[in-house]
Image 1 (cartoon, helix red, strand yellow):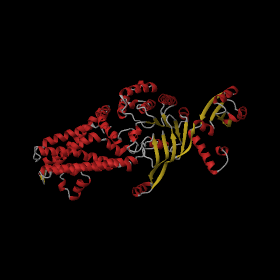
Image 2 (cartoon, each protein chain N blue to C red):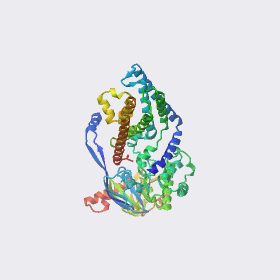
Image 3 (cartoon, each protein chain N blue to C red):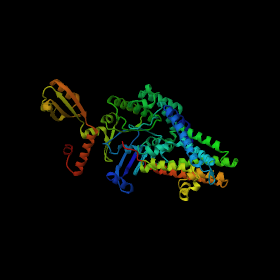
Image 4 (cartoon, chains in turn blue, cyan):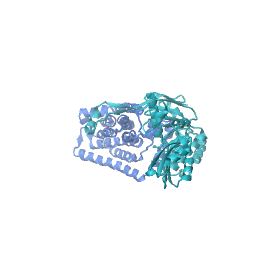
Length: 263
Length: 347
């Protein structure tokens, strides 16, 4: 574990310098991620702007939620983007071979290989939106609520990482799980809307099956209403641990089934 | 020491019907066929040996190498490298530190960066001490003649350069065993020869145990003392290179084309049974002689031909690995049927 940590800066620097060969590409990616998110927030404004309030949710509160979700999403994007390659490509093309012949954890090597600095665009947009809407979101700010926000933001990273790991590892069984992963991952965008009013069934799925709702939406709802905020931290932590445990288990079982590609 | 004990690797392939409807059905069917890629292979390789592991495409060579190098987990049996299992999570790191792997079709080099970057990373991964790393890297650069392309990004290297660089990457941590899976694939004759020479030098310098798969018989002849032949996942033959040659006849085909008509029969009479057969083409203007390499060299035959005929063209082809396997396979079957003697089986 120590060795992996010590090696990480080396991987980051290699990934960054390797990316420098394609500077323009990374730069355009960064801008486009940021622009996509801003446009999507504008869409929310168009929809919600005509209705002054949906239950407890004003547009300002929704915008704050929107910004909040971007931050863990961007952090996950920066560190574990390579999992998409696992889902779409690596298993099918036998590209895990070289990692398996080296004496450190193959999952670590695979994920550490890519450091996606273009995720910083998303991250910055998230932070800016949060800063703009924090004072008018209706949240009563205190040391406690900031702590809740920070902790839930941290656990929220694992909502994305865990889901990606679980569904990308399915590729060991079905060769290419990219489309499934994409579908499940995109459920995260529904956590930006007032799930409370979206119907019991869908809410249950977003809370207990694919817990984007529980980990990303629920903490902000609690902060706005001012009740159960610390409970939401606990639930987020539990969900993060459960997701990562399942993810690592599916990977571990899957890698034993890995059958490379013929040559 | 590497021990394989009755190793098996089965792949399950789903049975897929024809057409769109068949594909749809296969989504819901649990039917599959079992492909026995490796089917009960046992052998032992001692330290410092060099083993050529050969067989036709799909015989299970790569699968065995991948099991020995920790990529695949065997379905049955046991693989021990110095007493440890490369595919068990608790033991793998200890095993992997002592082996190096080169795949002819895959590279472990960082695509967009100069070679030194990958080597630095490998140095950390394998915990190679600084001074040892520098010394070894310099030796390898010298030995593999890599000075001219050390600072170029890997993507700009030619295949021959890349293979040498991959070899160096696999040797940096001074592995006890080096696995080479088709290292000369796709290389032209000259580059291939250089690479084989380099491997030979590496082996002599560091006394590395070498396990090599290839389709080129010349690689095996230059590098290996021992040959293991695999067919349909089973070991057909395990013995020294000399034995292979002895058993299956070191034959080669020499095709000679002349302006005049060649009297094949008289050539055969001159050399006696050293010429196994001769086949005329083109109205006798070109004749293919199949000669026994243990009794007659190609040079001797050609000298005779040059002396007696106006030779226009010569083409020499040696026995390919597929033919050797085929011969062994035929022999194997003949013995199974209880027929007597090699002579029948070889025809």
